[in-house]
Amino acid sequence: MYKKKPLLIFLLSVLVSANVYSLPELKTSAGVGINLTGDLGGGYIYFGGYNTASYYGLGVFSFFDLTFVEVNLGIFMASGYWKSNSESDTGGTIPLLPGLDIGLLVKYPFKMKNDSFSVFPLLGISNRVLLGFSKTRWDEKYHFQDVDYNVFWFKFGGGFDFSKTDIIYLRINILYGFRLENKWEREEKKWDIYNYYHYLLGHGFDIRFAFGFRL
Image (cartoon, rainbow, N blue to C red; front, top):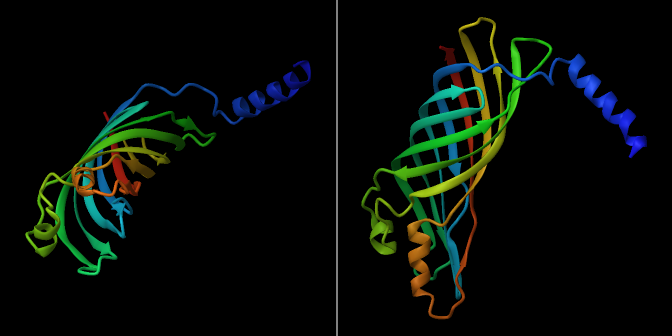
């Protein structure tokens, strides 16, 4: 125990000298930006095959920030691909669809020695709602409805703020996340007469670029 004390003291002194260990000031800000997003997985394995769906999109969002918490609201447009190894259908294109994200992130900013730059880890949740789905043979055959993809996400990652003024700053967040089963995936399990159904974990990313304004 005593042998570890010099190392602990050394690490704390390095943090203090870099001005990273000081507590951040409580400040409020708001901003707008663009968001690159994607759902890379999910779907299910059944007796004799699998069905998966993935999509990618681009959108805009706004946020309100209170140092340790960020609340955000965004809209996006996305399209993707349906894949299946079924003999009757091998997949196809998911048509363009609009979506809505409502999220909450907690963070702890570390201010670097350069006052214009700070970094922070991120952890949070979001509710993703798809607002519409074009009527094609995909949703008619597989029973897609507007609510089938609505789902909660759990996200983690990091970001940084860069500013040269006391008012405006640039914020970049990179997040990765995992989601719960959506309605489509849950309802398909009802057809599993062989008790072989396995849910495939849904996962995806968000890359956000925004300008913030301190209030």
